[in-house]
Image (cartoon, rainbow, N blue to C red; front, side, top):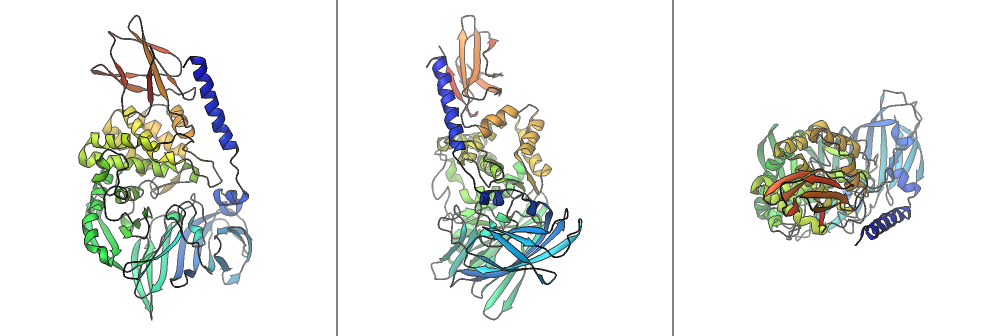
Length: 544
């Protein structure tokens, strides 16, 4: 392919990319869900008390949510979200009924009491109905209603993407996390409910039981969950970086012995991830692993598990290298989200890569810790076959739009490439730990993460992140020798500002070069075979 043909092909690629985005349309409902509306922006979440009863036979729920908030600026209309077919029965403040205007899932509540800046107020929302049933959890979301092998009800929530308002009334936007939360769930007396945080008490009410769970740390709304079943419990103490951590396990009665063996990966996970990412972020709320009637999810301090008590992802190795069978994928991946998703949470779903790229990468770091660096590197390289490179990783902002699925496998390879650029594994580890320390219990933007990493690595990463997060093409290093032992090189198939340093296997030696999109010359002592370090996620093309 000559230069003019290659240029034309590149232009066609970016033209098709822009056309595919321009054809994507968003509705007012998307904006109401995905943006900080005026009715959301004036108040700051402080506390929830979610009090619900579950009726398994009718697949329905009923309850109320007490919302405590601080007034940031004077306003009289509040947005609370609840998705159909659930219905808000009433909203009250100080015992007075409030008017509600409904627009799709958004409910605009007019407050009678004057909202004074700096004060704390409460509102109580009462609701009921049959929530959306999850068809393919956890991807489509909702409530899963199943029965175990003994005919006992087995019920769970999962709602990332579709939102917490699919089953309870909330401020359904990730930018504002509630500071603490009490979750009270009433179920038939032969069942248990496991939710986030620590169990305060179990209240007996005839043929019913109410389980009161308290979360003392900030929690993202999609991380709040219920898990209802005929559970049995076992536990252990882990002596970690912040002291003794309670690690609790809840599994179906018939799976107890299998779980005692398989769940040993949880302790291994904690050891590896405290090494790489710093202390587990929720010592006060404990760590729980809870069996669920679907694959699993990263619910904060209540991680759900449904991987069939086998290693890999449903018994398969996602990397194709064999290393993926050394651990239970769901235990490692979903628990990794405690650091990236639950500790560090995106402000907008468009930045979902902050959750998924780092957590995908955590799988290889787990292997690195227990089996050596090359095991981890082989694993992350092996996942490249699952990358599409069709759309950017970052989505559209303020419309509840996530980026492409490449945020997983490509995201892991991007971070591994940054590790190679850093060229100092202890420095890289301190950057990962530093992220969790700098943004501890915070909601963040991509810009904050980018700027932190650039500062700590010590190079300008603007073009790097623009290329890998906001474009879909994979940079290619073109190179050739001229007659006088001069190595010529440049980046192609990339944005014009791309200027990433890269390491070459140059004969038997390592050579770091600093290409940009213009031809650069480097005089060498003699010619040698040129190969790009295989741990960089780039292409390479030698010209003759």
